[in-house]
Image 1 (cartoon, one colour):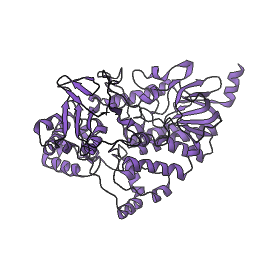
Image 2 (cartoon, helix red, strand yellow):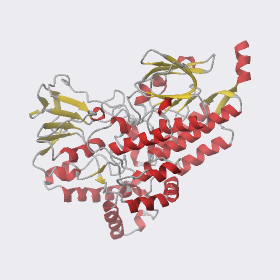
Image 3 (cartoon, helix red, strand yellow):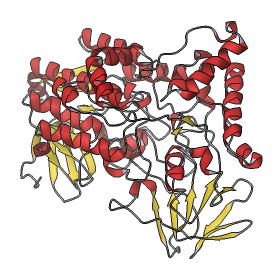
Image 4 (cartoon, rainbow, N blue to C red):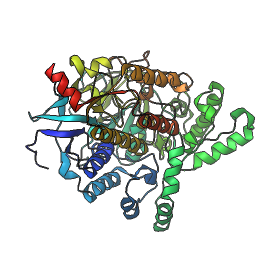
Length: 551
């Protein structure tokens, strides 16, 4: 849309991804003056920016879509059980166009700074085009994995070929035919890319520091008959998602691990390994998340499955993680990833044995050899959860910077509000239910709660809402306590804030980013807060504000 001349809105939403689209839908339905500021050239967030080969859902497509519109559920036909990026972006475009939401969105519009005006109880936002907008309420619907991080390697600007982070994969595509390609990283993104390009490139060298556990996606098309059955079961499907800890279709096996025979355990794992999606992770015994012995046994089962799929035993062992067990960090799902290493043109380089020394004009130099490439792909992850927040200069009461407040890790109330930052809402914030669940199921919960709070403010003539210090401390302590029983507390992953490419996020400091209590408990908690007149939140009314200004 063309840039609006308006400078004041009741609500400004930052981010036009999955959360921002639903948030502006709720606001527009209520007739609230609102706009969405999006830094990219189009809507879709993750599904707009990540154009790399192999990008797709790891949630079942029909559980990832919005549930708020019966018409959308009836009209949209998911083509695959786990839909690919182009189809996902078409879906979000379809939703936005169906409800005429683009008219509220401003693209190529990056927010550089936001400051709370304590006298007038409004946020003032500085945008990259030089404008200053103001709003009563600012809703941060920014992506939790939207700030890519490059490795800290000498010589990256010297390379004469093409190089880019996977997040910045060229939108018009790139011809990889017969090219010599190097990819750094073997995380979730690389696990999708590598098998997708292995049969297209001339030579592919994979530079791996730490392997990741992975399991088969087992994707398949969805026929017209299957889609009709899904439509008939949508209420049941979403009810299942609402009662499971992760917001997926997959429910945990609640039998005690050690009361089930070894033979029965292996039979379950064999079945889950061949079934689609996260069943191998989330329909498993609960003890694999909390008990070292149970997790070790299951991890060895997965290791054996890897060994069966990789022909070279040395390569197979290098692809098996030794520093963490299966499932204690988010599990990447793959299609023929391990089989890619059986190809003569795919080579695994262990950079723990032979570290990368620098990027050269022609490629990558390790302590052992020089490798020449036409293209270098950096699949080196994201400054997860708080990175996108840190990139905006957000200042609350007394000029306090959010970046400083969260320097050692986030502290929030319900993952959706922050003490000393009034009128700032985060439907998908750190420590919220959205950060560790099937994302759209989590963001619908968060958006609905935030929208209901806005209506409570309006109905009660309030113009300011702020989480109390006590409420924030209590919630953050609850989030922290839940890590104590989870093996994930030991993981080097974005669940614990680890990122060796971000200063201050190296090994040794846990950041309590995600809520581990599960969807049902989270929903019950936030609903109880709302049902008790939003206990834990301080409000100020129009009348109180007038008295304060006259003092």
